[in-house]
Image: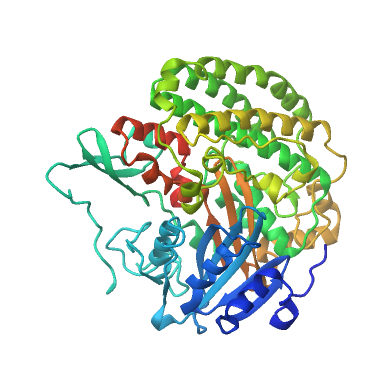
Length: 165
Length: 401
């Protein structure tokens, strides 16, 4: 199977039900889309992430009712530096969808998804611990992997692999 | 850090409760899980898991390795199911590369994955029963597990950290006589499951300790991101082998055991039924293994056979290039979830076009499933915490990475 080039044009992808649903809800909140290697990725404005997730969850056709994963990618030294990555899963339709939120390095904060999915708790704590991205309204945003007194966030690209000596 | 807050130590909300520390060195926590329990007499008021004792920064290490050098690291996340981790990572990179895997390699991968599931579930069953007080089951389970580990040793040269899968296929053709040994094991195995079930399924003590204990409703299970047998034990019918087939699982016929009760006993029944299903899938894979190569036809990615490398100039050059400078992967990102024995094991791999992954994230099932513990334990008795932990089947290496 040869690789097909990625489609990154919102206009070309607007037939996709996930994108159509979000565009119908609030076209201004969707800042980008990509269809690559059979996976759909949507970029959502950080202020509307929680509402976008609720829209996808409550849509009677799509029913993205489960959160599969939250992680982050650090694009240092580029800005906006962080991309928080959400994998949603629809248990009735057995489909995955990826949402992304871009965050700048000096104000890396996004709304927590704990009110929607309590299971986001550990994932967000992990991202906070290893990347230093804050999640507003998280009930207990503390380090989860590293010791409490650890200096820095190890998965950032400006953090050396061997650690600070 | 400015926005850091100190560890929230549970403080007794009123004079009636006290804090009990459980772990990290506790025989029933399957590794180094520490739990802070707030108790009112014998009743649990709050549970707070404290993890991270086994954090080794594997995700960071991956960013400093070539793509093929990450494979041995994936074994070390979850030491009870090395093959499923290998498979998930290899599938992710193969998807990034757009590689086609020969059917023979796919079928052997499926067979070994199901043997891995048997291996993992046997350790779970043995230790879970041991935690609750049934000693004999442990010895029976480890007897069969030894057989599986011998099979792994035969095929990969290693009992636990197998690293047998490669990006693009398998490391080697399985040795002579291997399939006969697998067949011998699979023929014997169903009656061994009967043996375990004879000891437990109708056992009144086992039933008293597990039925109605640590209940998890389907709504809570979904909301708390539970996957795998923990989710299916609550009546939600999701199995990625059937719903998002990978590595040729669409060619196999099997049932997905689901139980609606949501208690420890339900999760026990689901896993024991999965043992039987795994045996069936492995049997089908064994009977239908196609002939052909076990490596993809992609010389820039897959190491050549030793014989070719010693006789053909071109193969030697490819070998030298792959080993010294790795192979580049087209830019992009993929998320590949598979059904590991514990639940959804997902690899999120980002490539920026170089020979090293830009980011490798492992969505590990133990980490997510552990969040259900709180719902299962609160309002129950201290003695049932041990049963609840066992029923989630956590591996702390998988949890902390």
